[in-house]
Length: 339
Image (cartoon, rainbow, N blue to C red; front, top):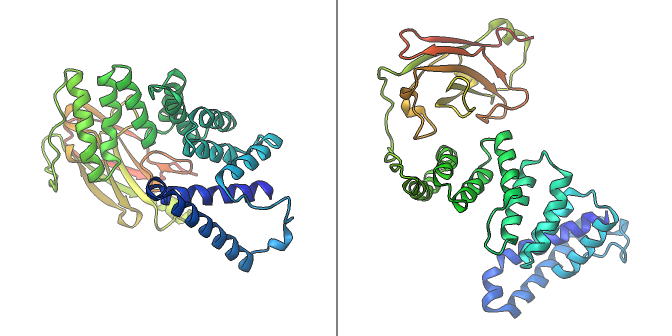
């Protein structure tokens, strides 16, 4: 319970400090007063609706400042160093207080406790860069980012940071290749700021810039367009209760290549059976086109999470290899060999 109170208080202090950051710079006295008022209001509200009587008013007293909260959190973690979230929050607090080396060491504790947690590993890599005098990602940070991307290719922060590390290491071609899939993951405004970074990396590598982004382009079925018919096995559908908000992904990828698709469409479960036409307009990566391949692997995936990357519990059709151009539609049945 003590650690919970300290964590809650420290989160509140950090949130208030972030919101009032501009005021801290111009009018620190006013900011300090507002911070105290907000924290007292929070404590008063908890007193009215919570159960403070169940807590020791001395041992469990909520810290009144970030310095006191950090000191209490340090003590709690010294007594019980297995608290992953505690180390993460301590790392965040140190970073807010401009103590990057301490922040790195705290995140290192969290990373060691959670080697399979992608977000923790990315936070650790970032903390190592912030603690570096030149803000460079060292070999250990790069290794962490590479492990995360191998495990979760759609982790945006890991992909962005690894591209920065590759640019720092004078590997512009690799940086561009790392960043390009982000264009399919982010919104238009973010993509518009990202494209110049990718083009700069490509130019440094002696490569041409990316093709101009086409807005509101209509798919045009050409010689390399691939028609795919997707259905759900009736016997499977009669025996399994499916979530109504499940998504269906129709994916074309390079046989034996990376998991990132060269063309993909997302539909709802209610649309089954459906027919889609995959072509270059469905490609998430500007430098990898369906029309550039002579053979593709086609698969349909039923996803409860709505994530294009395969998750535990997702159901796929049998993958089919298709030579391009395909003269006949490809037929995929989800659940035909399940259960």
